[in-house]
Picture 1 (tube, rainbow, N blue to C red):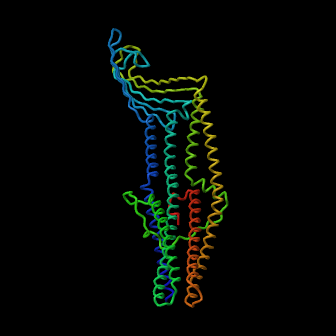
Picture 2: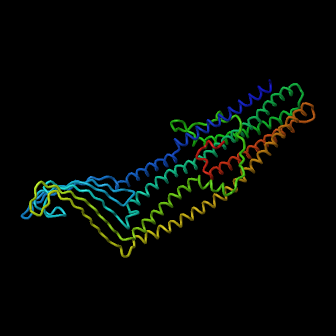
Picture 3: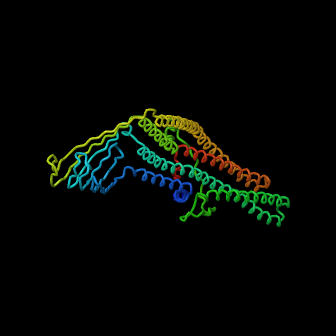
Length: 471
């Protein structure tokens, strides 16, 4: 029954620690997403880019066109009104239009005759921009680029989060380790202070010498200095972490010792994977590669536009007219006649300087960007291999340091027993306690290096975008 109660107690303590850590990490992650200026600016830039997309859609908006003309003179005396709706399609080189025009008087307003249809004309038609405008033109290129910039801005938000949260994760682990170091020095000081009180009583009773009392007091002074230095180090770590952790109003919060977890996190170990799998995962997840891909796609669009701009220009306009008349002013005039009209225009750039220049610049930009991408792949590949080893190596070091600390703790207990039996002195006991603390600090340093390497590994794999992966 006693063992069951003990196990349940340990479970509750560990569960409380994990929950406390996760709650703090959740709060830290939410705070960064909501308040950190670099991420907010990246989100604002995303909204700006989305506005650019909306702006560049304007050439493809449905348009209402209207014309009105009044002519008075010795030859003509007429009025003319025209209303048309026009729609240019983004995904094809076609423009559709329809409308109505009306003219009064004798004037060559229509294509079929120099006679006005008394009840106006209805029309519907299609315009085709062929050859150099079939695939892409300048306005489509601007819209393509703004859409790609909008995608790029979303990836840059991820990149900002990756960078900021990687720094936040390091600050958080550094804060935990600084807190553990402070607690270890405080514990060491408390032991010496408690012993001093006991020695003072024994000194009054004549059981210990003055030198033993003085020597122990000397250790108290040394340990107080270390506590003060550890406190300063912890305060700096708290201030560094506070830059990332803010309250609901985005005001910087004071992070004190009360928020420290009850227990230290466990060291991290990476599973054995092939180098290619790790590198491919990093390329898939890292926002930088997504940003580069959008830039490459922009260059491909520029190359496409450069090639089409060197082609001849061919425009075709097909229109159907319905002329409406109540009476026929002449014998050859047909009432309510219908007609189909087709026109074509052709032009060709002879020197093609614009297209050649655009194509050459796009090719150079493509080569430059591919070089940058290749170098980034090499960097990621090299660092992943190195960090994989470092994470597992520091985990091993952590286990060894933990074992060393356990042994030094047993030696302190044994030295205390020797003091009780009169076989040792307080100099040796203090030395054992100092050695135990140093062993613990070695363990903390190994754990810190293990987590720093793991955080860097997650950074390379793009996983630090969500801080909940820290544990």
